[in-house]
Amino acid sequence: MNVVERERERERERERERERESERQKKKKKKKKKKKKKKKKKKKKKKRKKKKKKKKKKKKKKKKKKKKKKKKQKKQKKKKKNKKKKKKKKKKKKKKKKKKKKKKKKKKKKKKKTEEQRKTEGENDK
Image (cartoon, rainbow, N blue to C red; front, side):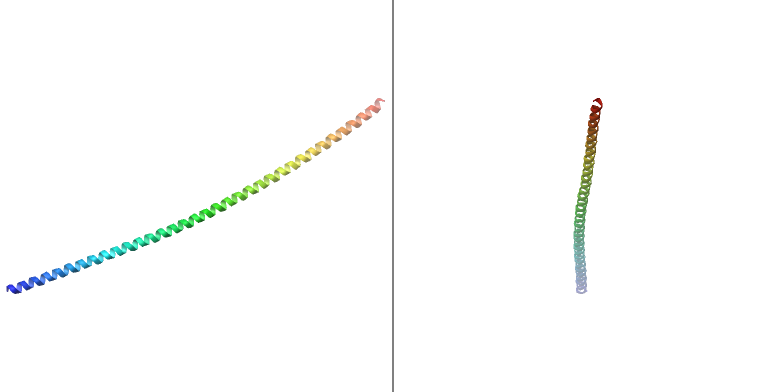
């Protein structure tokens, strides 16, 4: 009886040990899975970050391009404005010159007229 009981006790002990081992293995597996999941998550995050960085870079490039385009447009606008200004100035100068010429002509005519008048007056005096 005693021997049988001891045998049973040993059997139970072995069973418990097996269960404990199984439990340990399960925990280990779970830990591994968790680690893998974490790694995957990290990788995904990294990938996402990389993508974001790429997108940011692209955006920056686009912004730079836009800025360049804007600068070019501004330059062209300025050039156009300056050209217009120059044209206007030239026109004004031409107009002024014309006016001056006209004035000169008028003065000359007046001078001629007064001279003629003087001459006729002189003749009349005689």
